[in-house]
Length: 436
Image (cartoon, rainbow, N blue to C red):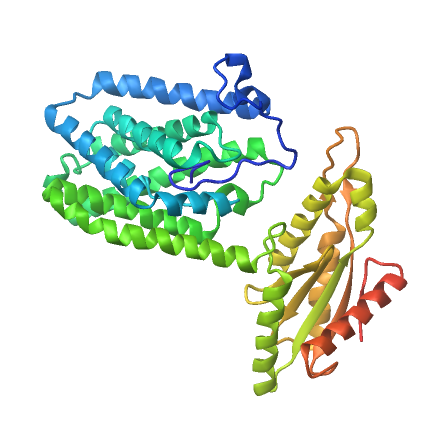
């Protein structure tokens, strides 16, 4: 992953913003932003930094370095810098629009370095490439502080040391002599170790920074993990090409550029269709997709269920504990909706504290059961507040259920029916399901 990087670059923003010093580049140790973050997170970051330095020093003492290694190190740095410059503007925009772990392609060169050269030199490659990214892309971005980039360098360096340890004990060293099919398994193992260690370090760091510790927040989505494996696979290919004919590595630049652009497009698409607070569909995209589902159901004489969901006493929760706790409640309920519905159901935030769920190919009984299951699961949720002595707040929702085509021939009619059922649930005392 990467708490940044490997990899993945998750935001370290917490529900309660830290007050960083106004002078970002303070030369005084007491003025560093590092001292403003939570103590457990600070201790963990320092531990990883010190461990990476110690392991690198030991590797420099144990593993000999020759002239060929130095030339390969310089080449990897040159290739990494060239690739970063080629995609610099795209990377900067991607970092600006990302609030979740995102993939950068530096790991193509760091993994190749871990396979090809002593890991003390690989650590140098990591430091130079991330230093270049910091200076050229991240330095002036809000929320990016030196301690974050230093952690990135150190945790990626540790991943490279782990890969180097595997390479030294396998037939991959030297790589040009690897021919057996089992050598492929060693490469896969190296990628797996890199990914697992990176994900572990990043997940711990995020957990120490944030109150949102959902699996997606800590480990990234399935798509992000698949993309990370693809990037590391490119790193393995780069190592193979560099060990055979150095000039062949130029063939990697066009697909890397195309991959970077596709990532940016995907992020823009996600931002345009997703509610930023909950990760569910926003109202416009939900309305568009639901309209298409209704047209499909009409052609096939199928039925659909529509749930209108409203959080009970949400305004009181906001007034009592503040909007940060309210946002936490929204995210928690959104996660519950995702876990309770099928992957092809359409869950969206309709506005404020209202959510909508479309259930394709569902009859009235199934829709009623889903609504009651959602209501029951949310009834057992607790939201931690920012007051240490306060008890957790319990949540509940009222749900209105309407069916297509029984309640109308178009989306507006079905929404109106679900809305009437919702108000019937509220009038009956809240925390329950009503249908028409």
